[in-house]
Image 1: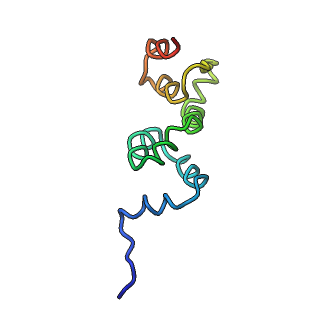
Image 2: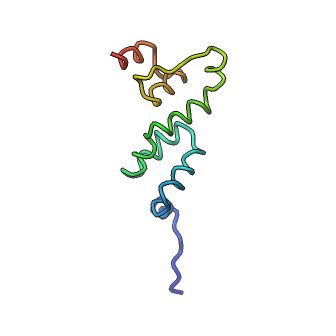
Image 3: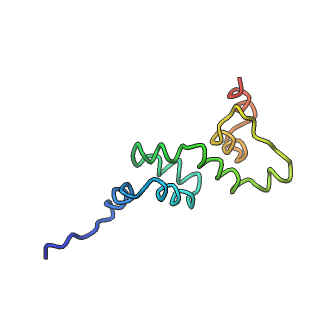
Length: 102
């Protein structure tokens, strides 16, 4: 009778107890939209993990490898991987990328 029942809203708090490497591994299976629109809103720690350059570099390689290989597109060093992902996905224009470079 005194047993604790796991509730749906407990899940993010249980995941926060996992080591960062495991949390990061779980995030590797998520889409950019999930990372940006959901995970990053859970808490400060998850926002920091979701916004890491490594996450967005992985997303660029996973989501746009075909574009990069066909058109031999190279990311300018001076822009973030998140902005590069947005550019490759058509969410950001060349003008936005150009502004980020200046």
